Length: 254
Length: 64
Image (cartoon, rainbow over all chains, first blue to last red; front, side, top):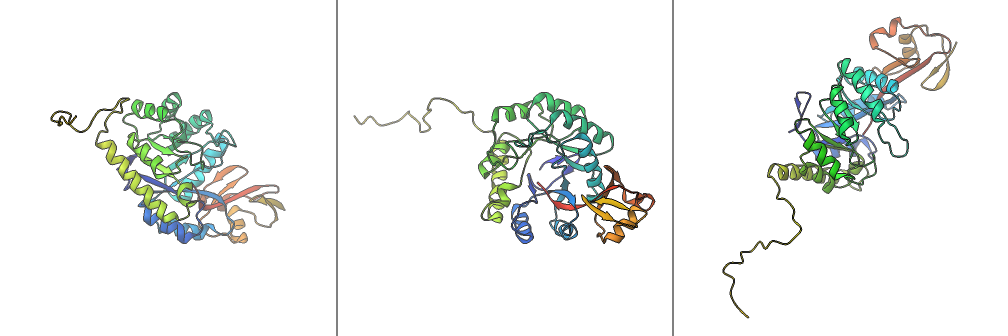
């Protein structure tokens, strides 16, 4: 199972807490998913915060607060400090958003914020792209986990750049890697795990499914299958057919 | 005096951030910022509220 900053978590599935039709459906989906980590955020208190706190405490998962919606280093760093106090964890899913339509990370701001937060004792989970250079900078800034996107947040498009993700996996062989964002189907999650990713983080694919608990279960199975396949050392693909049934001994019947 | 609390104007007589939270009836599970800077819980009682302050009071919320 994945180890993040020295802490082993019970599942390679990390699940978001947003967009569920009701708190009861959220809780049911988490039970079905077996997720070991729940992502959360913080927003202006308008009456629901205290009940939500009770709800997530009952999930039995570790909490990973995010800095979603932050577009500047200062905003992200301040939000991280507020999250650390509120949720009582040094873990922070660091998002510094660079583009409104694609929610693409501002990777320059991300590296800067990661450095500031790491120096202040945070354990940073950066939402990043699959760029090798930027991921190297994030490692230099102190990140012991990297979370490249599969596709834009909430798009459900799956892994847009499998080559880049494979390359990242090969380049950072000893660093825990999580595909964060863009997963729409269990097959996408399985694909990431088959590549050797340590975990996947998803939210919309489960929360917006017609049956969130059913989809949570499907995602859990896909993550397990993908991980088992990676550990079993998959065959290499080839262009031409290779008969699986022995040719030797075939009857001469013409 | 008039301040801005979570984006909305508010008339208040509170002199410290701790007083303001009490006056506005917030629950215990909140994090605070004053004029864009984080204020740890332990400093709320000694953080003054002054005219025009922008106060943010955040709570745990759904997130992805």
